Image 1: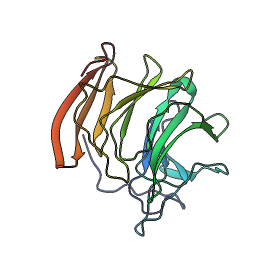
Image 2: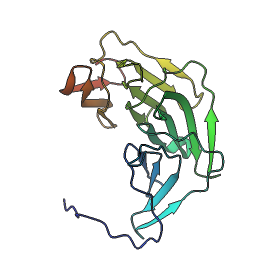
Image 3: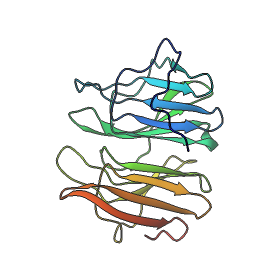
Image 4: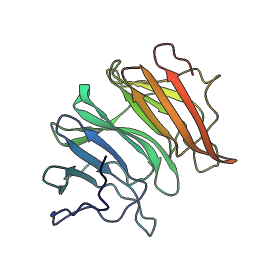
Length: 212
């Protein structure tokens, strides 16, 4: 694997310096989408950008009805929907609990009313389950100091959230990593932070058995 210290993009435009943004790879177009984040002053963004790794050009999407500016949210590519799902984050003052879909065909945002949903949070993690057309979400925190260890699943057909059994979930955490391996049918969670400090534990979730 070869890493470059920096990619020199010929693009005349590009996102400003950001941290805490959400991003995902759109497999059908081979574009990287980047949403939100905050700048060095702490101001949140609601800009949506795409990056073409072949031409190395950035392009800002025109999004007149974009979600509120935020950072520490999640953005996941959902091939069956031909779009991406955005959930939660923070505007710097309060945590958010809204769900949005970016439709690649119409190039428009659409807020999804899901009924029951995860409580407002940020710094959570989410993974797309292609075999079942679902989004799995775990952990996060809010501005009141609560750290979550609940596990939720969003049905990609009905757009309804369901809370799964959390009796055997890993300890609450945020800023952790979460990835789904389709061949194994399992999600893996590593590290993050708890109210006591940084974590170094590694967890496996069996999607079919719904067990950690």
